[in-house]
Image (cartoon, rainbow over the protein chains, first blue to last red):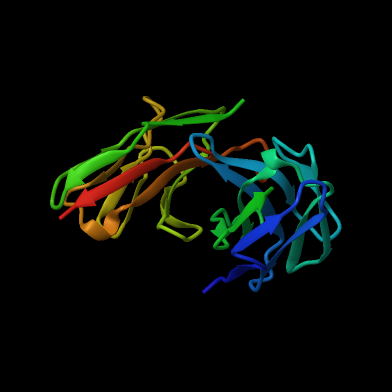
Length: 113
Length: 113
């Protein structure tokens, strides 16, 4: 089975702190994604990556950056956390062009005070 | 751009009732269509998918048929169980060559014993 793990299930940070969310997948997938999930808004794509060191902005990249130094790891960075970034963050991965299914991690619930 | 619209919840049913969750989409060409399910405290997992018109995806008693003429992918189950209580997301993967997925806002299902 594909396994996508996220570094924390719950996280509490202060406004202005730099926050790192880590995601690791064990299936040698090329594509990795970061979403945030908010009630009534569903999933919104923040950033995605289709190869090591490659990244593409999603629909709501403002206030976030990402890093993909190794194929299995995709990090989401909040440079200066704000209260409006309180949310559930979901990481996902998928294989190459012919593999369409996304596999999700359990999510990180982030609270910014 | 591409979009997915699904019925708002919550949907509350008694055990063994018939379930329909409506999903319609807007996209150019022939996108792939998905239903994902999110159980409490977990990430999303693929429930079923269909990749071309008139395909029927099925899994765990759930079914959905890709209807190009009505741009719909409604989820159905003949007899729901308490364990089906979850949030259901309709999603599409477009044909524009990117790896982006578009998710609906989710429909919460609660099944009562």
